[in-house]
Length: 301
Image (cartoon, rainbow, N blue to C red; front, side, top):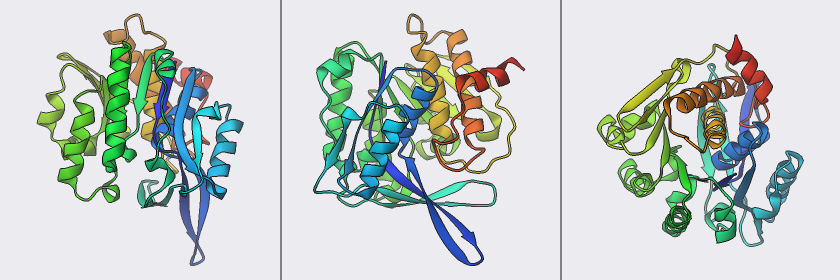
């Protein structure tokens, strides 16, 4: 079983037609996207997060319930609003973000019990909450308790420039989590932000790096593997990395007897590559997640 902890929000995806920009509401938030991906790929998963007692919060809880998620770990805060992320797409489907996120519900996270941690194989920590020092301490406490219980901790950098005061302070904060996580994921751009030398120094961790149209690669204790992805017509890249991470973690979780062997890791990123690619063929981070049968059909070709 996996636990995903962090933000759940609404992606407001913009589209201009005839000089008028409209926004389509979609469920989002990287840890929630990963949780939905894991659910879609057949994993046992719990999501822990917080929404406001508002229209958007009610929509997200209903969305999670309709998706088949256990919503008992999503708290509803009566004093805070739900975070919004406005998303603009360019002609290639690449996205840019603008967050409406001051004193919102995802900065006031629910407690995670020792019993829930004990039931998991992997605990996944979201990154958006790291803009708040209290949430950093919250994440570090969960990681410490997960390790004390013998669990793996996964962390996707998922760096968003407009959430943090400046890159230097953000990188410093992120490194506090990266130093204690077991599985970490970077995009190519994030490798440049953190520097190749720093990423290469994480030798004792499983490091996953997404390479866009070139696929992805893994690094672990001096060994490495690289796998190509498939070619698709891209509509929206929102959530592609989350779908990749969910796909990869789903395979690792199915092989907990030897999760970091080369065969498992190669199979994991191959599965993740196809999951991420197919997820870009429609709008939104979750609605176009492929089922495992579709992914395996691509893998068998």
